[in-house]
Length: 475
Image 1 (cartoon, one colour):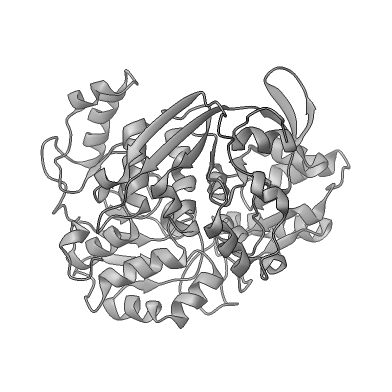
Image 2 (cartoon, one colour):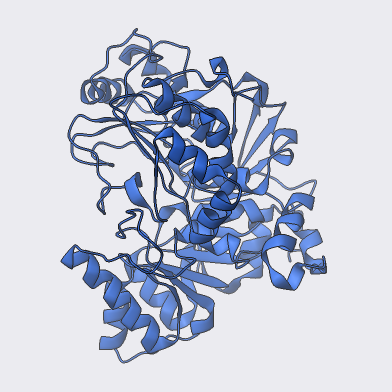
């Protein structure tokens, strides 16, 4: 660790720097590298062409998650029917077998989404550097680990050397104090922050979240926040480990079940006099239930507000914001000035690496209660992993969803992105707990509104975008 006052980000980078390459770049060591079926094939092929081996197989993890169907079959009966997708999964299996890499394959009882599996298996720990060919690797910052996405060419380098040529980021601190109001959650807070910062507001920065509102969050809630920090352009997201972190690790990582934690973890925080390149302060009590109206996660609004006009986007630092807003409104079939509350939905999706953990499913089930899914709405719940699915069934959450008319499906990325069987039809409108609402993200010409699990559950039972605070089961 550096002897000068340093940020948590600086400490993590310094502790993993193998060599300083120039003023902006270092050779960074990775404690864990995670792969999925669609970003790894080219890397393995190139590695084999050069007759190179994987340097440290035990520090690799592979998961089949993006292309896998989530139809509610029994564990062990899933088959990837699409030939191209099946080949991706087969190649990943062959590569993992060849190099001795742990794989959560199609019919593994704990199969699921990479960013759900890694923490729940106790593989993510404070002070680590974790790389993955997926932008939402920022999730792991919730446990005080530096995680970020890498490209395919970088995957090959990591496999061969366990290192990465890394451009050091600037540092940003976001302090959030205050208390979230009744009916609001960390997903609402996250959408609020992104709408305030803008889609490029944290571009080039490693963001550290702090403040009383952050301390009050569970580790799973912190994962949601860190997961979506990338939607504001952040290169990394971090929260200093604390008592909640240690409690989570006691229940998920066998070496720490008795509370024997490394003394080094006590230093994993930004020093009092550490300097940040940029700082923001927000008040959690100002947050209302949020929903996106456009085609970018920063195009969000309180559910009880009216859809903003393109001219209102002129305050955004992006000069193209008004034009982007006009395009988004046209794509979404909406008009500026109209309320978004009461807008009918065709589909509801509760899942993704952002919101498919057990706490997310509990929040959704609390809103569903004894209600039924509204007529003409198709609603689905996709747990983030086999472990989450089993726990939800043991707690009776699955029974609540099934009785209400939700589809209770097998784990996977599912409708977060149109890479599998779960795809929206053109012009279908979906209330979704995912992280992105780009054009075509959930299917060609599909329309996605991002919201919390509780808000999505409310949309499912009312058939329209609703304010969860008005429902009987809102907490």
